[in-house]
Length: 324
Ligand code: GLV
Ligand code: MG
Image (cartoon, rainbow, N blue to C red):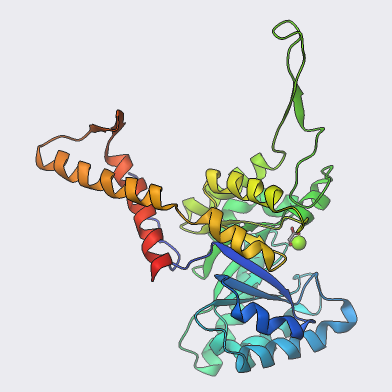
């Protein structure tokens, strides 16, 4: 291990994160009743310019008046390149900061963007004598943000998570997409005719590099990597496949842009009973190995060692959080 210790963000469940437009207050109660882990009330791209102020008022009222239970509550503020952003921060944190856990910063491009919002939030919290510190979630969704992802991830002690905003990322990089977060048949390989006369097409995941790069920056800074939207809410199988790819790479959650996607995210991002049971057996086997002076043993015909303990502990801890 490096001598450099990585501080971990507060341990929050973030398997599912539901986007709810601030301009649609009739959706708030249903979101509050859902099984989602995190809700972000949106002031940015789901809200038209002439609805921004009303959306802000709706969100302040809702944060103060609706019973959100134990859900983690976030707002997505407008981008730093708009004049809406400062009022989003000032008004919502001043008037509803007590029930706000996180602020989501869209299209974050540089560490200085994070610094600017941190400075504002710190002043408001100090002026209001607020005890709780609001955390930050950052959407990595531009080429600039991806280029600077490591600096962004390290830019503030408030940072909790990085989110892959695939829709804007595609726009920013001019990627050729089909549906938001989906796959493109053109991103594929054709098998070699010398090896296989019946040539086959194997589809690839065009988001692999971006997601993997973001996961590394997040984990190297103790943050949660979260996969963003999947646009076709009538395609649960497509959603599940995208969520599984993200989970395999290390993401611990995925957005839901429709309430029906919450259960899918929770399902894919929760360890299965079999995985938890296996993790328990790994920990027992390693404890016995250690007592016998061994660093590695075999379990079910496979080698396990100290790295297996760390993986098993992560899984058992996740199961404990879910059960809590
Ligand atoms: C999310 O904001 C996205 O652009 O995908
Ligand atoms: Mg976006």
